[in-house]
Image (cartoon, rainbow, N blue to C red; front, side):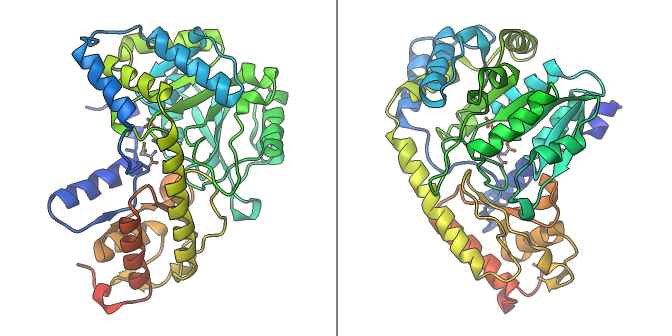
Length: 403
Ligand code: PMP
Ligand code: GLU
């Protein structure tokens, strides 16, 4: 019954594990959810008020498919002010989340067989989106030896006559790596040398630590800006995951095609959400700084805790986003929670079943020797989740059998 496209599709593991964890919690099972990358903070009051005013004022009709002009202008102002990027409103397309922006990008850029370079560990949806759009993902593996960073040489080795674009996520989900300007420039120049487009997903740009800062890919030079599609959104910066609001900025023909595609699929983002996003973007930003400080506190806590948990080796200290991504290969061959561990998938299953903590196996990110723990949750949950994992891995008898 289903077509080949659906048969080839694997569901988003981050969404699937989160849904499962939330179901268990709703059934009264005491699960600590460290799986999904979703800030536990509330949407800022400014954003909520903007959404409520939109409803009260009857701003409840279709908007322009690419987003309201006032929101695109405000996004343009933000990109100019914070990222040093000059985009006009007709170079900006507002969508139902950055995930949707990325999907639009691949849909308007890729012809069958076009290859897109993707760095592994990658965010779960990139390869699937490329495949859904008819393209071929070409995975470039990186590991701790190169601090999970791409180099121009790695790119060179994976280029073919069919390579059309490279997707970069900086700061990175799941590794937390933040590229410095020199490394980013080297990648950009290699991409330019081969005439590639660059998809720069900067959704975690505000979440950097230890003095790291996110340099926008398109700010490297005017030539790089012309070949870059900048992606960002409101989910992480403003804790607005459920509102579904993201955007892309690109040269006019690309932006125009994305808007037109969207005009047939969703008719654009919700009018209410757009007003909420506009209010969040234009309002007091102090809550965002407070959120970042709290994430940093949890990050430092998680880093310290991992040092004492046998089998979880945090090879590279994350300086961005809100994840830790330890290597767990030391546990392979052990029996944990009554389960013989051969992979990170086995370990995550044992941790969920025996310790009741939901986390995401590295295989979901193209890195089967690792797992991802999100610290976008309360300190209390993080502490409890890490306690449980530590007890399980230390062979604590309370967790010795699978429940
Ligand atoms: N890019 C990355 C790297 C992400 O982690 C996420 C997860 N939310 C997204 C894009 C999409 O975010 P959203 O659709 O909620 O804006
Ligand atoms: N991006 C977040 C994560 O990686 C949210 C889930 C998703 O969009 O896949 O967990």
